Amino acid sequence: MNRWFMAAMLASISASVQDPKPAEADPDRKRVRDRLEAVATALKTAGAISFEIEAAQGTNRTTTNYVLKRPHLARREFTYDGARHLLVADGESIFSTDEKRKTYTPRIQSEFLFDFSFTDTHLVLQLFFEAAPDRILKKQAGFSIEQGKIGESEYEIVRWSGPDRYRQQTEVKLWIDARNLPRRVERRTERGVRGGNPYVSTETEEIANLVLDPKLDAAVFAFTPPAGAREETMLEFNSPGALPETPEGKKAQEIFEAAQAMLRKVEAVEYSVEILRQGEGIDPKEAPTRRRVQAKRPNMARFEEASARWEGVYLLDGAWLWIFPKTGKTYRRSGQMDFYLTISGIHTEPYYRLFCEKNPTRVLGGAHDVKVGRENVGDVECDAIEWTQPDSMRNEKKHRFWIDADRKPRRYRLEWKYQGKTYVESVTYGPLDLAATPAAETFRFTPPADWADEGKVDMDDLLVAVGSKAPDFEATDLDGRKVKLSDFRGKAVLLNFWFST
Amino acid sequence: MNLKDSAETITKYFKEGGYTFRPLRQKGDEVSLAYGVRGYPTNYLIDAEGRVAGRWIGFEEGALRAALSKLAGK
Image (cartoon, rainbow over all chains, first blue to last red):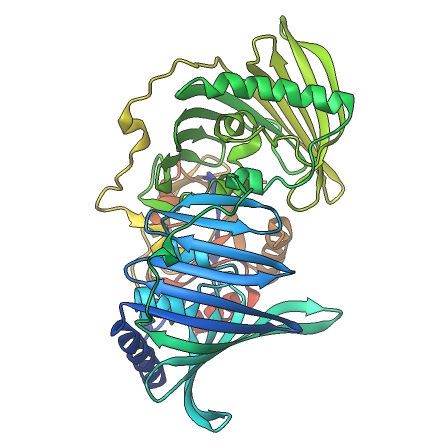
């Protein structure tokens, strides 16, 4: 957390503010909420439903078949770009498979609804499984209900607008039939400006063949891997691109696979790293990030991190990914998806993925200009593997990995350019323990009762409420003088909290 | 949003309004915690009676102007 914040004393203003009025109950909001509640109730009569969604976005059209069964079984199929995509949630795992890639990826079934969404959580799924109109309408405004027709049939159209999960302004319309069942969903999202004009995208979903309590085959929620398909983790899925074919590329791959082979023999591994960042806007005196890694098969890991910005833990407990700080009373929880770790920066170093990958490692997926040389780290002789590789944003990054004769990692360096400026991350590996026996508690986390789940609150909700007393504090100014908020009584104050640059 | 640009904008805004800006240093992160700061920049407007008159994450000049007008009793 940043130690510095700013206080501006608004010396010229000393008027007091009126108490904010309590928010009036919005009658339109209540009416829309009640209609959504009615849809959820109509769906609640069924233990299972099946339906088709015909979706249009611009000129793209897809038909998706859904079968949903309480409490959390689901099957979704659609064809895209000539290939069939299938997703099955069987109560324990979620499997997704892709005919074109001939692979399938199992994931632990948790945060179920999130797995179904690529843009926004599907309204029908939310209403069937969750029946939580308040959650759907949170932070929304502009409520209205009107009548409309599709063909010869009459519908009620409920409408609301507000920020979607990506904070983009979205207007949602839901057509409801006489039985209180959903018929059509339309979403209009403001996606910024293109060529000087505001760009709005519209998605329309026609809900067809909705059947309550359809006759279901026993196998509908069972997943059978397609013939010839191989299992692939999310990590591997997110490393597209061929492995290098050059002699040096193959030599590099051999070295990584040798390290993998060693790791395959053990149940658990422990090591620590120090990560130094360099680049524009990064304080050269910034302390390196220290991270301790403990990983245990089949799918548990604990990363304890202490950086200039944050101290806390990323924990994979076999079902969930927990993120919680050393100080503070909030935590985050999400479905165990190892790709999340990629985007959160945990995979800044490649050794953990060598432990996880089931197939020959794809750490060199899409790599080119691969070179293998010899270079010492301290007085330890190492193979130094160098390669260039585009990341998921197609940004080319330069990698260098030093590994000793026993195939233990020693050092790793990552370099990339962003907006013309160069950034470097240097990782130094501490001793590696291949005979680790971490205790079971290492991979367990129960949030204390008074902690808040960040996923269930908005960042705004964590702030001090308008109208309440601003917490008094004591801080030190640039001259070393002690300053208290209460010193400013009689004047208005603006507090700014910043990242340090 | 470029934080550096925001810092310059907000400083300029306040300088023009004749406000004095004082950087303050907290012990550990006790003030950030007390104010529930998770995202940056987080702003609080506190009235002369010590109550929170407004708060927002991100720099929105509109929100700031509105809050200041309210405070000035306009």
